[in-house]
Image (cartoon, rainbow, N blue to C red; front, top):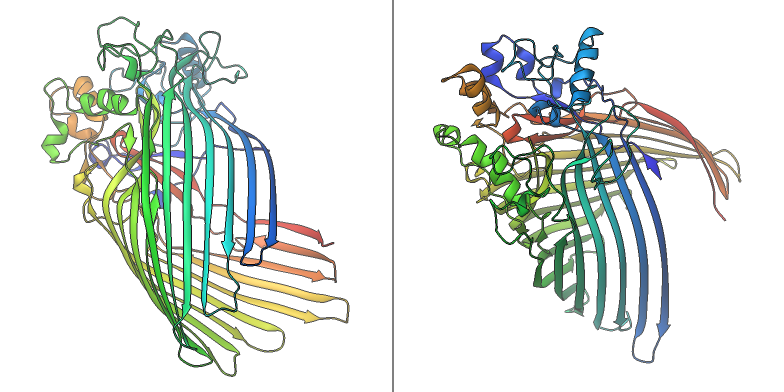
Length: 604
């Protein structure tokens, strides 16, 4: 499979800089972004997948036996333009300098507040310099490449009693083995067709920054369930599952691979190891130790169902959920400490302290996620069964929620997982299906969720904010039309709409933030210029948006031809907003625009 990969624009959120320079675009609402794509590297994602599975069912005298096995082998490689022009990573590279000079001479314009000057050096330090973001048409961004190759084998066997007993039971065993390699590199951009490879020790696309690890996971689980008919109308069930997940990792970055651009020890000599965790600044062994950790969890679940009448059912449930912890790429904590935290508050400057904002805490190991959930609701039929209604209220408390963090800087780019110590989510949902006639059905579904971060040691100042990636509400409605033309053909149609509520994508949401631009402004413009680099992400929340889709077609007994239009009214919206708080900006992706086509299907 071949597809595109990175479709983001960099949007700046620097209110002081915007006001001081009369540049409103430097503090732009992400919802108002006009997406312009100008990379000189065409983004591409190559994936090869091979899967094979088998299943069996067998009847014993005392139980039904079901088993399955799955083997999967996936090779995934992503390449795209980089993000490093904003930090002058390749400023001394003659190819970078020449590309900027050529684009400036050609009068190439970038979206404000960015611009191309006569040289790639930041305008902070050179009045003839540039203001560059990410994914520019210059070669100064470098090339980012990601490798994710994974082979896994999984299987399960379960035994179940007959379904016509008052007491029913089921138990089984599950196993999973995963071997995964994950690499993220920043390579030099020669201006020519790129050569792929996350680790290139020489050549035109020599690797400048790399995290590359081998991850192995072994999972063993045992589970069981009891269901008991307390009466003809009441059923109780108890389920238990125990997971043991062992994870281990070791770095694949060679120790003798040296830096060609980054001075980790700040001694003016480019002789440091390629991975920051190997720097003598971090340890003196010259080796990144392999890591291993086992995560276990007992997960009970209790459910109670009461058929109040033939048409109405009440239900409630409580249970514990689990997601194993794991390891970030080796060197993640060292990279954030050296190039983010130490830089912002280094050299006697205390920009984060001045704002009263703690700097991020990232660990190479992240904890397991545990959740406890309670739910209660109903299902009912009205109007002689033509109207079906269902509804529920729920509450979930999550401990050590896994959260994806994105960092960019002079080191290139880094993706990590951190833990949000405690998050509360509660809300309600409602669904309805109405048969409006012989040929028309109306469906509706909606939910509301209120969330709050109760504790977060990674970023303590975010307590009280919303849970990231959690819309305030979702609404879905659809009309389905099915009209028989004759005994063999039906006309089918569907129009459906979705409304997605306001959504934050990061734990950082409101208030002023320190960035790595503060010390840069201080160096370039002198004492007192640091506040120009202050960020504010209050305008990085995605607004509520709605889309409508349409389908119309003809169905036979074994075939169908259907035309469709997605996003019928070509609504513009933001699909995702990824803040990089210490960068002072977000990486925003547009939502899918209007799309139409025809589908042909044959069932045999």
